[in-house]
Image (cartoon, rainbow, N blue to C red; front, side, top):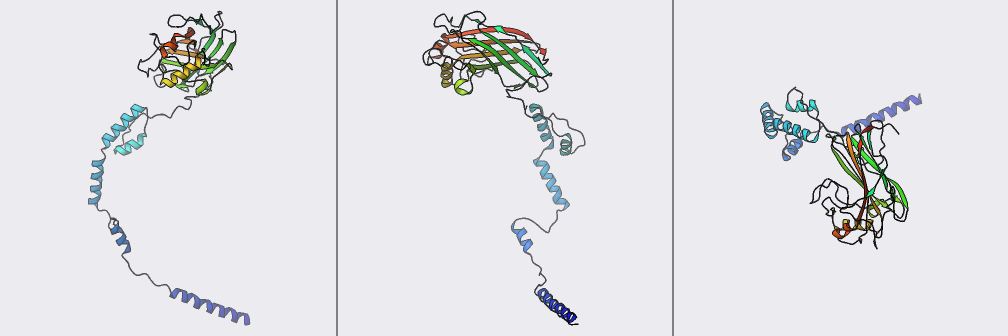
Length: 336
């Protein structure tokens, strides 16, 4: 009985507490604060768009965006950059149900610039086999005094391989070389070039690869000091235009161009065999093909008797060049 009485008193107490709490809450009075904010910020929170205002918006948009011009521009840009756009999106944009076909473009080739690509069964190869390089005359030094290279037949050898991979849309190459100096020391190395993108045209191809043989180590140089950039390549960025051979000396007997004087002096020091020079050898490879069936590869070694700080004209007077050229037929890579 006492328990029931106690429960009853607790319920009555809670009831009065709840009533007291509710009595402190009052109904909100109407306010125009929302309208005031909207008015101050140039928005309308109570007026809906009418048919007339909707037409005004549509007309203003049509005047600001000419869909025909936009579609024409998109198509032109797509064709220029080899790109393809969403057909349904273009149809929706133009307001028609007709499909608009535009070319899309592709992603950047993931293999471009890689120097560790390996050929596979989708690759064709141009292989010169091992060639014996011989000393050139003409514009080049005869190397009869203070001889740089060993003149023994077969002492200078090289092999160029160029790989074309249509599936990966790249081509890349390498030159295996044996350079023998006048003291009889022979150094065999393998230098690889980074992959270049074939592109839509695929052919012709005209590319060169230049690497420094560091004679103190017998290895291919790495970095700007041991492997400086020699000159503008065959693309003809310089004032004298495109040159057809990879050499310190152009066909007309003039010095090959450099980006600036500091690069010229760095390369001269690299291959100078006079006092103050590093006494290295420049290994060069050049590959050309017009149609893809037949290619021409030239391997060459160059060094100079001239002083490292000589003028460009004096430096090329001391350049010695050994070279060999071979015509190669494209064959399927078999894994050998």
